[in-house]
Image (cartoon, rainbow, N blue to C red; front, side):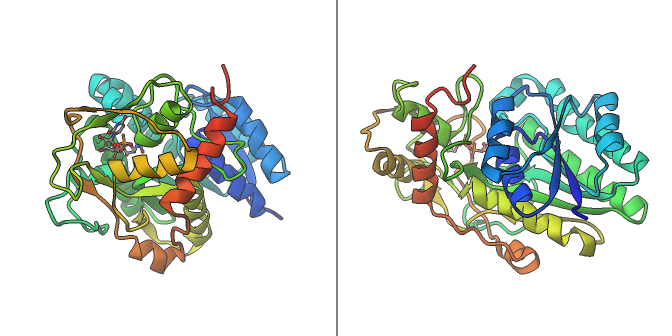
Length: 341
Ligand code: WQD
């Protein structure tokens, strides 16, 4: 009898790629998503890619009735919780909205899980909980200081602490929080990928939209960082590697006691200019740039020590920066407007 997993935010960028891997691995999948930053077309294509159907409940994790429907009608033995707001800049102008959705939504989900005695959870956390590490601190292990520097990062750390407190308060909770570094790229089929609403904040979608002509150029936020080429360093991780990380975590949950955090990263730091060159190679487009000042709140260098996930979850990033850019270009050039209106 196949087990069923409830995936909140499963129509989103990482959620949709994870659902493809879950279905392919034999999990039955129910998605709950309010479609505020995602498209039902993504779910249609997920099922096309997996050759299997999933169940879908349209709703917000703050909507108790929608959650009740998801648990009552479909049942599940575990939950993967992606549904959240995720834009650093937006979080600074709307902290209430970020705490309501990211913390309040998780509280609502945990209450429903407890009511239905479902106590296995994989939580979508973020390397943003590390803030701006001290010079020389990278690669970052899970024990690195947690100093988020924006409301988005504060909500992710708040939820991590909530999960630890819950797991310490009563037996039976089996929880893994996955701290992603910089997810990027697209499914190699080119059928699903990143489709941010409005003007993208993140580097890869900005580069892709410049390459496909939706943006006039790439704005480079700062070339005066103390790095090898003056631009900031990050750990870009292929979204399919992120997806398989969730599968490994889900498989591991039955052996987990309480709550633990794992970094999902490649262990390699890459500069903005190095990503720009990789996108130029992948797209064959020249891509003009305009250098601007540093973006407030940006860190100089953040990259992972992924050894704990490799050891405990038998997970290791397999795809390179060029794989990320080739797959992202295949998606963007085939879907210039993302999933459409
Ligand atoms: C990367 C680098 C920018 C855009 C955030 C969150 C993280 C995750 C990913 C949710 C920085 C530079 C960017 C552009 C640029 N979000 N850049 N021009 O800020 O490392 O991480 O988004 O899970 O949790 O913290 O990612 O892609 O926005 O920026 O020069 O048009 O690219 O300054 O140095 P970031 P990013």
